[in-house]
Length: 336
Image (cartoon, rainbow, N blue to C red):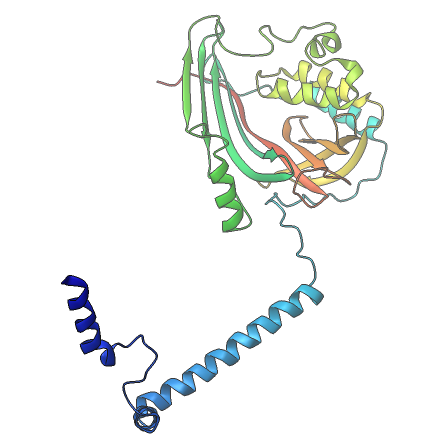
């Protein structure tokens, strides 16, 4: 019963089945309908746009193929680094010139005194680098460190960071995506009870054998640059009397390979005299430079410059990879 009914239905509807391959209209009727559609203004505009899109697409394909053959390799993107300072008149024996400045330092005034806390203010720029396999991401991060150290080794230290500096939005995005610091760039301020102020040197510079004292945490066998690093570490921790300042400069003056780079205007506009040691003992060829007030021997700044080879660091040599500007060194009252 049901099979026969199914056959009857198929027989009745079969001529109208759109899938049986038989057209519902004649070929002449279909062609006439198409001609009417294509004759409308909308259809003509669509054909023109379509032809333009095809032409543009073809041109883009040709350019892409040509680019694979003749496009130059992209230049490496370098990290943002501070400008080099300009030194002039770097003639003369470094040892004799620095010894002369040391003699002036011995008779120069001591630090100003309005309290009993050693007050230091240092602004720094440092190249921070993240190496992940073959990918290197760098940024210059300025910071400001201010400290007050009491005679009983109590005190306060405050550090603030400025925004990292990049050469492009893409580099900044990649740096932040790696999240190297997390919240590590947030400002900090810590107070320390008596005897707990964090420092490399817990005692004052001695009147005698200052050379051995200065190198206790900076082994002399590391090379002459280690003495430069020791002097800058000391400048971040202690105020120096005129006699101690003169003795420190006398130690630097005797370093092998010391050069006089000439006069320079430091990064806050002060006139200075520059003395350097250049070495690869620290890993890459680097120039370590002290900038001094030629009249008093006061340390104004410290520069680290890669000279000929950046290794894996994404910087263009010569490149400043860090510097410090010493902005205040006096005795004040502790902060409230």
